[in-house]
Image: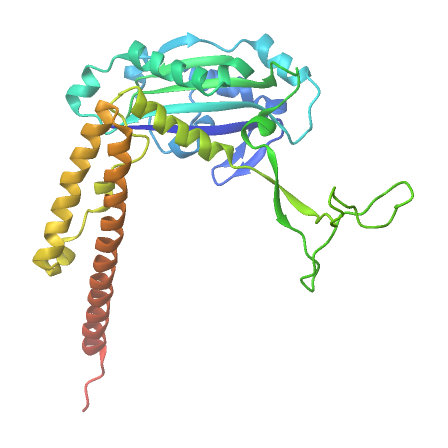
Length: 326
């Protein structure tokens, strides 16, 4: 079973996407999101990015649960708080529970999963820093899932702090000029104005690029560890064996040793899932490391076979299309 976490910022300004315009908060974006998540007005463009292709079955919408609805006053508070025109004013997290059997889907315990999500949000400190505006459960799509929408106003500062919290600025690589020479920080006041800035040892201080840390990946990793430590039975990534689906043409050309390696990986996947359910993190990581190396080598063998098949097909096609001599 897989529990996928998705994260998306909601900006004040409109944003152009491949699906068209994604309305910004200043242009009614949060109101549209509220109506869509609460099923007052279905608008698939407001779905979190990687879920926009899914279809909603209105006959199942009666099973949705709206634990908390976003109010218009809360939306106005966000709009009225000083902000940059192109900044982010809110963010949404979706928790999608996939790869369930028909029986698992029928017996899906909504409250148990709600508590799982709430525990994670508290563990990573999100609910302590940001106000939750909306929390809903949807049962009318392919997989049971939850949407949590948060205000981007940091409770500790009263200012918007999405980027500073999830993507803080950190020092990157040393800056260099076009000739590859190191660029140093320069004093801009005092007796040493215009001279290189020095550290406590008297060494010139290199100028470094400022970059944003990928906090979203850290969020994903912590979700995976939380699922394991709580013995939820879920993994936050697709199983290794999901990439080991080969065409009949490729499978027939595998030698017996390669086929046995595929069987071994599939067996190891079952052991990994068992260890995951038991909360044995050390065993999970050990099995995963073994599977990773095996999967890479098996995929390389499969790619070589696919390349051979492509060459053979091209040769056959060329022979067929080759002009016949009179």
